[in-house]
Length: 119
Image 1 (cartoon, rainbow, N blue to C red):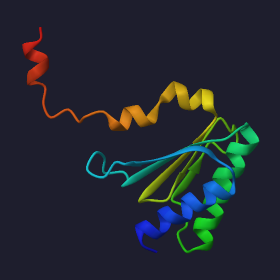
Image 2: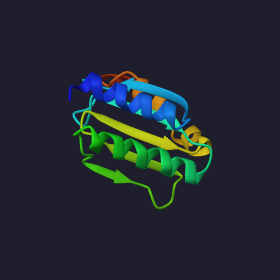
Image 3: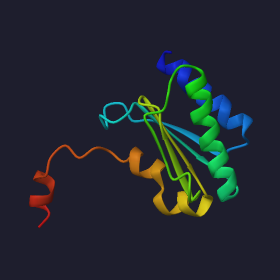
Image 4: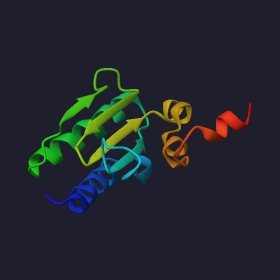
């Protein structure tokens, strides 16, 4: 399955599961871990777990078995690693605290020379 097809599958699944505030972050070139991070909110810990489990199930069904799933026991923040796409599903308060969208949209630090000059 191509990466764009997998991204479409993930987004369709999130829509089907009524995930809220879905964001797709293109992190290609910012990290070697993945190309996209998808961040979504669930309305309760059960909803977060159900969304993450369904994303993992549908990806596996399509021939893209997840490399790993985390946080399914607690349900405040669940992660599904689909290699080229990492899906984060969180409760709104957890999402606000970590603010992944801001973190991954920050410009990359090229060097530390600016720090030395600011002292």
